[in-house]
Image 1 (cartoon, rainbow, N blue to C red):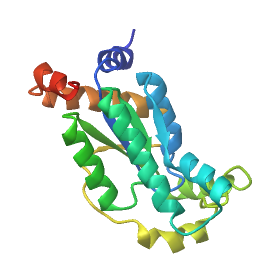
Image 2 (cartoon, rainbow, N blue to C red):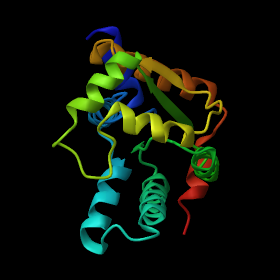
Image 3 (tube, rainbow, N blue to C red):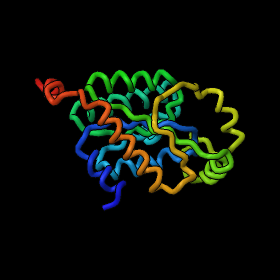
Image 4 (cartoon, one colour):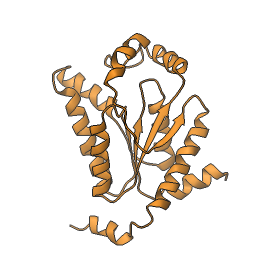
Length: 200
């Protein structure tokens, strides 16, 4: 087993809250699925929730907020069960990050933001390659992205930054290493505090 394999094995049995971040077309969903498979952990994709909500209720006012609230409710349940969870969301707003931090603190679990980036030409190619393959509310052109970009708030997430134009295995190995380091830095969290969370 290589180094990345050892690190994956080392963190599989440790509960971790992984939160994706990145502009549309930067490969968040691809990386999120790879992390979920490596950790044998549930993946909660905000876009899937929103698509189902739109399919059932239509693109009505409040459906975006509903998708976020349901995403957080499902995430909280997984964390309450002491499971790792990967949340796939653009992390457009600082408020979403702060709410995620509060959840991690509530259950005394480490939070890792996986911040996906890539060169603009790669992002542009990926966005334009989406046409006809995604739901109607996702961005599928560079022009549309430039109109949306001002909505994305800039803030320090203290996360693991990966360049998704590199091979997937390299990005995954970097994430696994970051998770292992994160647990090392949070070793002061005792098993006693964990058991307190499970009392009924």
